[in-house]
Length: 258
Image (cartoon, rainbow, N blue to C red; front, side, top):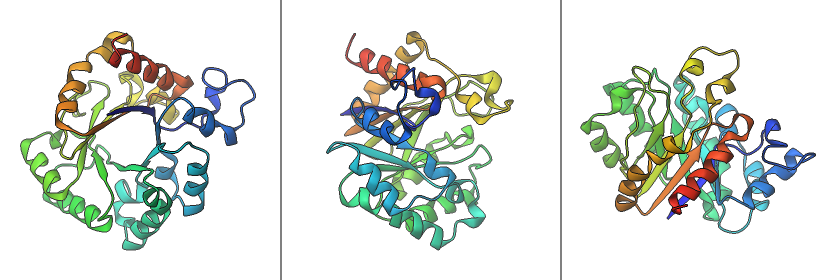
């Protein structure tokens, strides 16, 4: 099973390109869920979610719609603040989704500064211990993690690994296709190398529209993952101007052979 979606769904600049003019933020999720079967929530990275929020979001979607939920930045980027209480609050917030089989997974996106060293391997073990019953997909930005021992560690901890497509810049993770759990997870960030590190606004990094040929490069990799997993989530994070939706539809057509 392959599920395709976008990272986030509530963007002002999607009104017009994606949603009909006049669409209110409160109605965006229902419109999104009419076309896609899952979404990746990224607001949870910037602020800790709560049960009520996620319960209300679930209520706006049809049965079977799934949510992948980004880990809060205190859990991945500000790790000195990652107390057991922080993990407990996050775990509590996700309970409505977990209890109703609407939680696809937790996505733990670590920064480039998260290097492959014993201290950070220990942190991955701690991360797993704090969320023992949840499916977790780990995204590395630093290419130093792409070595065989990483797969051994992730399999031992029952942590998945996120495959990425991002600018071909030194030190960043290049394209790869593997899985360390029965779930495959792919995130498309765009290839805007010029704005990846130098930008005034964070969204500029994701201002990129993949041409069909670049998405087609991933078809053999996706087929490889399909043979090794039970399900695959494909997420487009190039959200600026609704480009993620264009590319999600394009990928859906490619996988269907159109």
